[in-house]
Length: 283
Ligand SMILES: Cc1cc2nc3c(=O)[nH]c(=O)nc-3n(C[C@H](O)[C@H](O)[C@H](O)COP(=O)(O)OP(=O)(O)OC[C@H]3O[C@@H](n4cnc5c(N)ncnc54)[C@H](O)[C@@H]3O)c2cc1C
Ligand code: FES
Image (tube, rainbow, N blue to C red):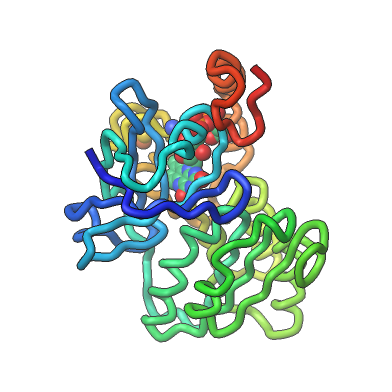
């Protein structure tokens, strides 16, 4: 069992857990993820490593209650434990001295962006952060991002905080005013990452995205996380999760991410009200 050392609720249905997992913490690097199960009957939930503390032996994960399993996870408190916690999985982010790097975070994507931005800054890059959320109450880790970015631009879809607009509006304005960065990295919902990749293609800027495809085993055996990149089949769990955004077949990814919608709704309905399904439960 893996104990939850601390819990913070960062925004409605978005939680930060620090989990005691010394062996995972020892090897964790920016860009990797874990797969956990809440209990013996639990579904396997992949979550990005948002931070790690090798001395304390802890891993920080930040997750949104997206459905039944993350709803169940969100009900746990500090002192509780999760059944399994496997990792670190996936290929770490390629961190190098690129020059000027723009890190674009959408929604919960700010959590996985944070350790990569920190590593990019430590490698000597000029790091510009762009973080966006639907509204002010969904903004979190702004202070943490300030610490790892030379410049941080915040936006909300509804204009309830700082400025109104999508992260792509801010990115375009930044490129037009400050010039082309050497690398853009985007993490967030699939449509947002696709929009960022479409924009940077216009300017010829290398762009990496971190895919959150549906996963089962996380070891390259089951094929659930299959993605087409540059015409080749890749597995997000072992070849990724980061890929060249200009080569990813986003249409296929979007279609695959919706494949189990009926089963996901059924799981919420069966659980009934009070399942913690991020406000999606109508059971
Ligand atoms: C490498 C990776 C890293 C991720 N990191 C984070 C993170 O840091 N924070 C966060 O909030 N979410 C993250 N996710 C997404 C998270 O795993 C899903 O939200 C979660 O599994 C949903 O399960 P559910 O039963 O609560 O919801 P469901 O109702 O089953 O599904 C809700 C949504 O999650 C997707 N989903 C369902 N099962 C999986 C699965 N096994 N793998 C991936 N997606 C799934 C569905 O397509 C659907 O869009 C990550 C996914 C991957 C693959
Ligand atoms: S999750 Fe099974 S191959 Fe990637």
